[in-house]
Image (cartoon, rainbow, N blue to C red):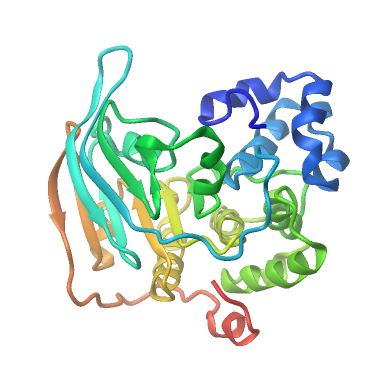
Length: 319
């Protein structure tokens, strides 16, 4: 049974105010982590963070299981339009394909349709017309029970990190696995690997308040990688960090991309986009006004290198 109303960020309100009996019925089946945390007893801010971690990894589905291999992360929009109830037309007849293994920047002014584009990919919104495919999923014909399966093929990184303040770095990353029923042995193997991958193994016992903004964002990225996502969706991931840290976060995303992960990143930082030769899709007034594919990407010079990926890869981990 799916949690009533789950499927958009708007249902965070339902989670924050849900009675204990309802939380127990829908959350506790996923094992000890929820039962131990008792999110219904937590302050509203922390409950929101708990809800986000659970929703993004597709926890609200009683058939949940730890998914090591996601589905093909090919995105296809065909004549997609989206009009909201207030009459705002966010997207107008958008058609595009993002192939497996691509890195794509999505840029455009405020109100251009960037956020709606991502919400449609994550099935937080549905199109008014047109069709959308993500991997093997036809989102326009998707059943509610399939939404968690779709989201477990993705890793999502937001501008505001959304870490759980009272958990260490290790536990913030591990939580995304515990909530969908991963075995302890899988967690012990996977979490150190992804922390090495983002250069934060030495910070595993730290709390979010002890980290810089850039480090917190890398924790959020590590959390997004725990289920071997084939697709990373990054919504303004550098919006709250300084230019040097912004470069490092995008550099890390490009390294993950070179290892086979498809990356779709929304940003307003044009200097950052110019620093990395990747495909750029420009939205304007809900339409695609530019789409540049780069044939041979070249690496810019990094102001400060991050911890190399080789140690994590040599440790036997896989994306």
